[in-house]
Each structure stands twice: as structure tokens, then as C-alpha cells.
Image 1 (cartoon, helix red, strand yellow):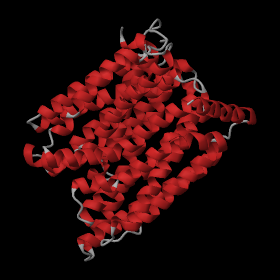
Image 2 (cartoon, rainbow, N blue to C red; image 1 turned 120 degrees about the vertical axis):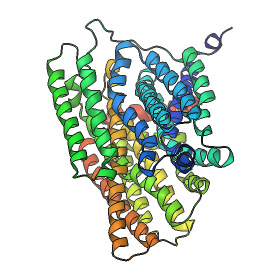
Image 3 (cartoon, rainbow, N blue to C red; image 1 turned 45 degrees about the vertical axis):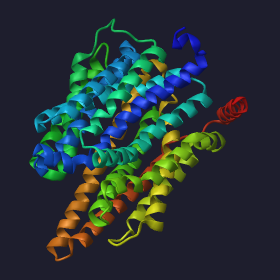
Length: 489
């Protein structure tokens, strides 16, 4: 008897959800697991400080550039196929990263790894939407997805520190091999293929090339802006070229017979509005997440493992909210109060970090700040995800998933670049004026945390305009279905 025959259809769906979330977690973790291993990679492969950033940037550029195209490809040919293809590419390139003994090979393998991550991630949210059409089930499934996407960053820091200190940096990539192979095997057995639109009218090759090129140029300009400066010819040239390609893409899609990006989807207020709010939160959340790790290591002298453990309360806070609490709160109060509460906690957490001095202890200020940031992600991300996908037709769920993921990836890159540049420039100015390095670093990070809190405040204001409360009948339906499902558990 095969696994699929032995499982009921309902149980198979939930195990399949665990499989796609496992794949998503692996890819999110990989975005941060490298950070704590960078000093070891630099020493072993002979990287310069400037070239070392490409170990991270190559992954981010590829991941952010291919999400839209991969998401639409899933709509056209089937999301299961696209998810499994992404897993194959990601797992194989992880092996190449671990075996790399040359910096060029490592950077190239990281780019391919980002490509695989984009292809697989683009299908995850769309698979959840189609597999869980009932509101109560979708909320629970989204909670699991939200936890893996939100908590994966801090788990990456913990795993990276533990593997680098106990073994060596190669194992931060090798650990993906058994996880990827298990996810691939179970995914092939348990995930149902979705109904595909098909390629009867052909694939929009021109549109695919234009949007991928535009995103690649824009993400490249963002992630290298800290090195070259926002007003430099380098940043403006690549950024401007990306904008021109994006405009050309819009014109082409308006006239293409089978557009990869039907422009009507931009009129979905729930999708675009919620993605924009989520992006504003992520600017502060992820930017300060990375800068918080630098603050712990460079100012307070934490080791890589200690830094990862310092973020554990944030991960646990997200986990607590993801175990059904966020779903029940959303069923009771609707999405808007949760988003507003979440953004308020984001502001509080970043404000707390902006008050942590160069001799701060972990207790209580840093601990409470990380808990607030974890709770904020647990409260705000689920309602924003469900709101974004609520009005999207199933046939276009892959494209919508790509839009949601692109908003997050580009916003994360913007947050790191903008807040990092502000912190670096302010630190440099203070050092030139005679301040100590620790004091200057602390003040630079404080400025970045404050700006991140401001971005969250803007997110709260925008949410008031774009996140709608459910109509009375919708609210009763969601509450009753959640109560019913809980009674059956």
C-alpha cells in the first residue's frame, strides 16, 4: 500500500502543507544562515571585504528577480511541477555551495540557489490557497506559512552559528541536502497538481525577460547602494535602467495577447494594498533584524551563536502566535485590529532597540524588544497574507503569490540597504568628530531603528485605508467555521 493510498484526503493535505512549509523554511533560513559564517568564508576562500558581500547579494538578487516569472509559470504549467523544480535546483546548488573551494564558484552557486529558492517559493502560497479554500482551514494553513517565513531568519542565525562553530561553514549548505531530498520525495507523493491555465496561447517570453531584467537591475541597485551611495552614478544608472525596463514591461503587458502579468490584477485593492503595508513593515522589521545582529556582535561582543540565541524569544513569540492564537483573534476581531496592534508592537520593539546603549544588558530591554517584534510579526503578517489573497481567482494565485513575495523581498532589501546606509553614514560622521567606535556604532544603529519604527508607523496609517474589515456575514461565517473546526479537533 502506498503512502497516498494509506492517507485520507484531508490528512494528506495537511501533511502536504508541512512539506511545502519545510521547503519554504529551508529557503528562508538560507537567506540568513550565511551571515554568521561570513568571517570563516572570507578567511578560507580569500575574499576581500567588498567581494564578501556578494555571497549574500548573489542570493538576494536571484531570489527577488525571478519570483514574478516563476509564480506565473506555476499558473500556466502547474504549481506542483514548479515547486518540485525549484527544490531540485535549490538542493543541487546547495551541494555546489558546500563543495566550493573558490570564491567565484561560491558566488555563482549562490545565484543559482537564489533562482531555485524563487521558483519553489513562488508556488508555496498559491498551493496553500488552492488546497485550502475554506476560510478556517486557509487561516490555519496561512499561520503555518507565516511562521516559517517570519521565524526562519532567526532560526538561520542560530543554525549558522551552531554549525560554523561546531563543524565548519561548508555544513550550512550541506544541511540542506537531506531536508531538500525529503521535501522533494514527500512533495512528489503528497502534493496535488493544480489545474493549469496552459500554454495554448504561448508563453509571454518578452514579458518574462522584461520583468526579470527590471527586477534584477532594481534589486542589484538596492543591495549595492550601501557600497556606492544612493546618489552615485552606479546606483542611479542601474536603478534608472530597471525603472525603464519596468515601464517597457507595463506597456508590453497592456498589448500582449497572453500577458505573463495581466494588468487588471493591479486593480485588486486587497492584494496591492496589503502587499504595500506588509512591505512597509518589512522595511523596519528585516532591516532592524540584520542591524540588531550587528549591534549584538559589534557593540556588545556577542558570539555568532549567542547572537542567534538572542533572537530565540522573537522566534518563540512568532511560534506562539502561529499555533492558532492569531487565527482565533482574526476570526473574532477581523484583520484590521490585528494589523494595527502588530504595527504598534513593531514600533515599540524598534523604539526599545533605539534606547539600548553600548553597555546594555540583554535583560530586560533587549529581551522585551525582541519579544515585541516577534509578537508583531505573529499578529500582522497572517491577516495581511489572507487579505492579500482573499480576492484573487484561483487560476491567478501563482501570480499573486509572486507579487506578495516580491513585495517582501524588495522591501527587505530596501530596509537593509536604507537603514544600513543611514547607520554607516551616521557612524562615520561621529567617528570623524572624535566619538569612540562603540559609541558611534550605537548611535548609528539607534538612528536606523528609529527610521524603521517610522516606516511601521506609516504602515499603520496605510492599513487604515486599504485593509477592510469583513462584512458582518463574512465575519460570522469565519467565526463559525473556526469554532466548528476546533470542536472537531
